[in-house]
Image (cartoon, rainbow, N blue to C red; front, top):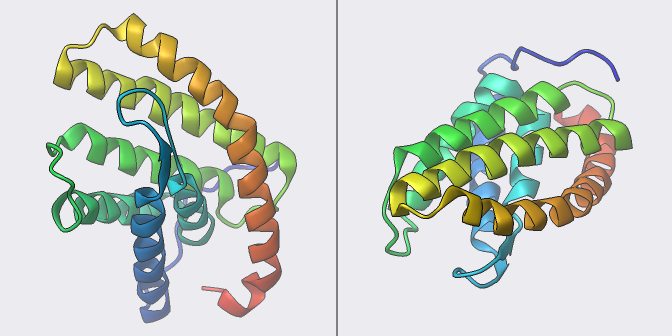
Length: 177
């Protein structure tokens, strides 16, 4: 695996337009989910996060995911309470995605590593902490449900991300920023 990327593309009209399209895609994909809100829910938001990281890099990717989170929390809110911790998690998710994926060769190992770090840091650590703080739910009880769910989702998300990025990377020469 090669180096990690710590820079984002220059802020041009093309970059801003692409960011807006990816934020819209992320917002829509994050709303598509399967399962129960009370037990375990599987969503497709990881696809948008992966694409944002691939095209926008760590810093613009983090900002794009913050904007997507704010849009979801305000315009498309389903009545849930806004919590700034989830916005911070969105920034960290964009930072991780951009660091692993921006201007990097698409490989199975890179995607599996990226998804593992993303799931561990964002989903298992931060989001579980935010649920614990918001609802005073026992942290080990949350981990006993969220840990296995995320462990199951890791290879699924890595495979889907790999297939999508492999297809998108073929078109990447037309979308160079």
